[in-house]
Amino acid sequence: MGWITGAAPTQAQLDACVTCGLCLPHCPTYRATGDEAASPRGRLTAMAAIADGIAEVDETFAEMMSFCLQCRACETACPSLVPFGRAMEGARAEIAAQLPGRRRSARRWLVGSAIANPTLVGAASFGAAVAQRIGVGRSGAGTIGKVRGLRRLPLRSSSTRGKSWPARGVPRGTVALLSGCVQDPWFAEVHEATISVLRAGGFDVVAPPTQACCGALAAHDGAVAQTRALAAANVAAFDGFEYVVTDAAGCGAHLKEYGHWAEGGDVLAARVVDVTELVAQLLDDGQLPEFGSRGQRVAVQDPCHLRHAQRITVAPRRVVAAAGFDVVDLDPSGRCCGAAGMYTITYPEMSESLGRAKADEIDRSGAAVVASANPGCEMQLRSYADEAVRIVHPIELYAAALQGRD
Image 1 (cartoon, rainbow, N blue to C red):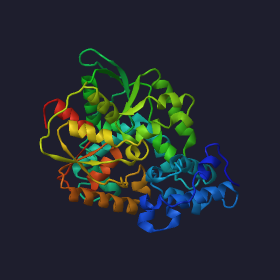
Image 2: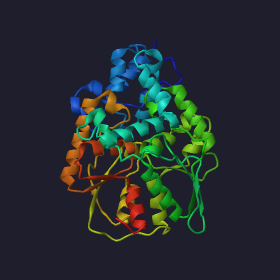
Image 3: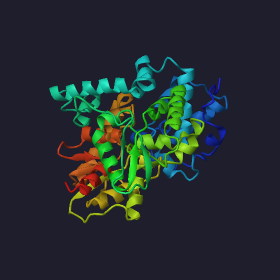
Image 4: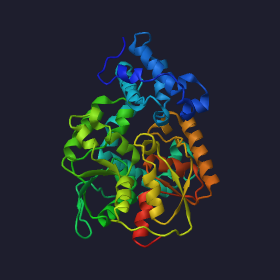
């Protein structure tokens, strides 16, 4: 049958791979299994077989693609610059189209509808807040244990959507804030820190009321129609802003690739910045102050979609150092922590193995604080690291220093 959707991997994407194998030691699933089918090279070979009519989209192919974390560590190691992330999204779109029964209805509903619905996310957040208070997930890991991975949630939360905040002093411009689907109710402190620092840097901050979920989870799950609809909504909502700021690495990576999801998406993508990028620029321009070392070590964990997809590594460290901390690298190669969106649910054993490996890295670093710029990674780290270790976003450390508190 071959490919049947317009979202399938292109021949140019597949031809870019020269099967050199340099990606192999950087792929978490290949490192764990030693199986060629669990490597980027193996997955691209399977995609090419479908494109050439040699093989069909079947359960074996679907399992090969689904087992991938989509961490994109292979992209930073690839000398041929294979756009593996896009090829994988295309392959999963084909699986969703050709094997519709494989994705359980609950999962389709969660990824395609629920996660993008603020009302439903709010109800789930209330349920998680209640679970925290009665002790569910207080110990252990796995799916239920992820309640422990959440920050302390309020029983009532307010959204940033539709609100605005004026710059402190003379404004130098206006930026839009991506509220996000779970970032808003579950990581409100990160938004607060982001807004506070951007205002101090001279920006008016606006969270457009008509914005939607970025669509990353839908894209990774092969839900093409939902992904395109969410992208189109955001292209319209963020039109005209100088910058569109994200404080969740996964969301930023997806927004920066809107060019192939919606008309006008390339224009929006060019204006998307991670908050650490913009704050590092403000620090370099002297628009924000830097604080002297307080002698405390902070370990920086690189979210895959910041390090490998957006190629941002310097900015988070710059922000942490400017806040007065001594930066410690957890893993210079940036191996995935195992969060990977829905991966903790679909492949809990592999997710847990990677999570515990990252927790071991934290232990070896000796740091009492870890800075991570992605909500999924933060939850994963908090689920497996020692409870005494504090997990925060880099912008929170800088915002606290700016406000004169620890």
